[in-house]
Length: 388
Image 1 (cartoon, rainbow, N blue to C red):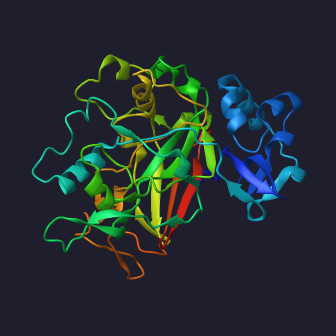
Image 2 (cartoon, rainbow, N blue to C red):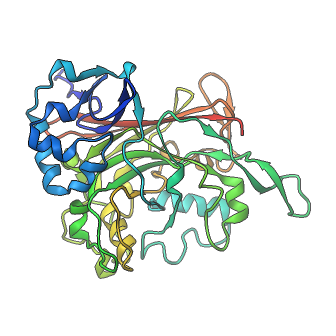
Image 3 (cartoon, helix red, strand yellow):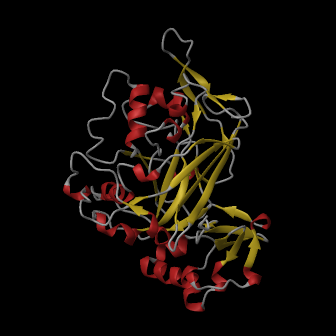
């Protein structure tokens, strides 16, 4: 047998860590973190040093490229390496705005079948534009932060009148997603074209956009998600630069009809990504969503986000929406995996789930083809449910 290609834990991912009460910019090295700024030459260090990625994000693509070249040949000094067990990981950047998209055709069709039986599976606009909504930046939290079960209005399954009750959600769900972190801002009134994607987006992180399905179902018509989504969005502590994912770029699925010109990537360099997600509930693998099958790419999402003249800010985060594939085991949410509670999931330990219970822990991981061979691990996103 041939030698199995290596898996690079964490890869060249960047984040923020705290040690001795001081926050620093760090780079992941397996089960250790490098205090990055002191390991660089003075000129580059002065442009990226800080408690998190904010200064690096704002520095722009030229500096991102210089940093990638520097760390590729860096021999990290031992005195600047720290065990992950000895540090506290922080939110990697200051979130400016947050947008969540809805770009998996398999996920969108599944929800259409579940929530709108007898009606078209996809909204009329779905294959013409990347559907999205503006979320709440202030409730984006770093991986490992407990998620408090939200309360709100919902319709009880025992209601005969359809009137709402108030209380904790009983349909708390996950959404396995991929997030994109904006560095370079744009001017108000100036759209960002497809070809400028890499000039503005620094890197990628994993996202769990928790969802209270019963609260959402009551409130979302006609304006869309609000309290059912705004209580928490978990992101990985590590952001993987786009430059580290060059080997993962793939063509997206065929589009029919052909998108309007500002979204038409026919003949352009492909910006699908071959990311392979894994979702574990209490340590048990429950789903393996394939990101390569997402209908709309991140470049198209950014182009649509700004086409009306909306400006970008350093630290903007936009997420893909739930990643789901065509097979049952590739569904990135519990509402799909349990078919809205009608097909309970039996875990290997014998316990049964439809939606999340207090004490449950969800961990989302992902791998991608690495430049030079092997696989690259993205930073995990982890969260545990606690009573509200």
